[in-house]
Image (cartoon, rainbow, N blue to C red):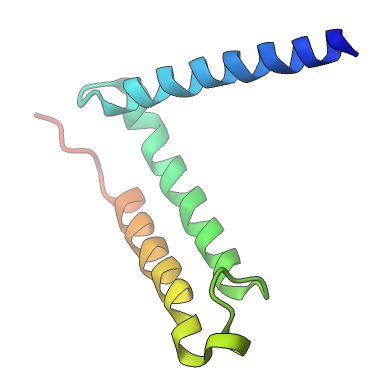
Length: 94
């Protein structure tokens, strides 16, 4: 059992290191990885936001909070539209 937890801990730290490395590479303005991944990430965020808007599960449920419960859906809709616009724009090459 100790070995399983050791493997899980190693996978967690390797995944964290990989995520931080990718985040640093994405933040560099002239990175080829940024040029390749930003449209993919934009479309993935848009799809997630669309699924969140149509899903019956909400952070702020409408059945309890009424119209105030639509705020999180509105935020997901705005985020989805912004991510699609970002994914569709071509990168600015100077």
